[in-house]
Image (cartoon, rainbow, N blue to C red; front, side, top):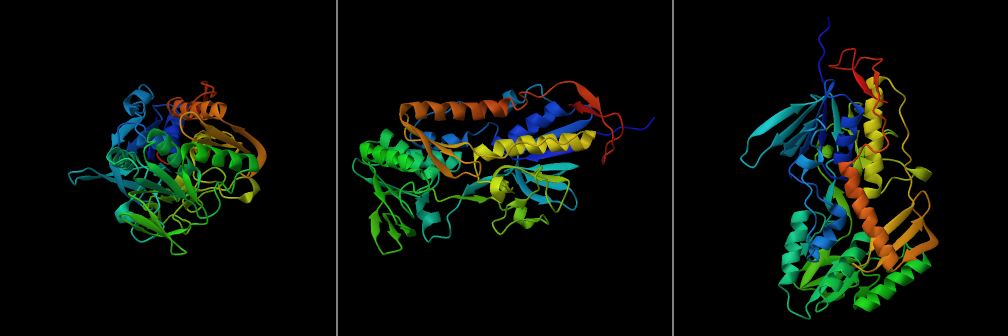
Length: 403
């Protein structure tokens, strides 16, 4: 009788995309046939879409992975990824004490995500705060709590994160002078109704909008714009976009100039077929042949697609196609206000928008739903296993998977 060996799947990164992929794979494939390892440095799930709330002083629910993945067969490895060798098919991990270990894989799901992007602007790394991570949000939270009344907080960046950070801080700290510096006009990608609502909320919260103000330098007490204007800032919050984790760029994987792994429609690396990339780490193409933007809204369906494609290829099934399209952009504007900007499939704003308290409730439901989906990534998947019809590396016949 032929000896059967488990197919080793390693998922690195446990944000929305990575955690969802690991859970969905555990549902699709039988434990006796597949060993799934989820690698992450922190023991609990971070709701990244709520970091502006943490910054403003709110406490977020504790979501330990040990509970989220209890009974699934997913092995949690709480350590930091330090390198990936796609030729040797290993992931090197290390702990705070300097010890390292190589994890071998047959299939790798790369979901290391992204962090803040200083854009190379002088003084940003030394003087600005970021809210792309939980440690960064906590540091800013403490700094804001120590400011005196009337001191100025400048949020740099007029995108979704900037709008949410500025309004959340202004609402939670009405004694502070909050401003936002945008490269273009305030909310210039939104519909006229959406832009009008953002301006109305800014006026109500007393937030100063510096438009056409590209920041070219950050100092301890101010930011400087391209036209030479100095904007006072006791605290600078930098929200001008995200930069992907640098590990992929150091591998033999085919990546973009920004370091994102180039994938096909199934989230499979175009250069290494045993590697899949999901979330911010991947350069995937959506409707209109436009790259999908970095967001939870795209990371989760990317994880569904990757997990389903891996399971189908291991079991010889038909690869499902997960729709990769947008419906809206959900923006919280403090705890009592919001904006739901409806968009085309390729993420262009349309005239329809939901505003006010109802929009805030909608956004809250979206956030709760996203966190619930990580813990329950298998909704709608059938449980009846089917026999495998092809062999794969380190896998013999007889492996079964859910349909």
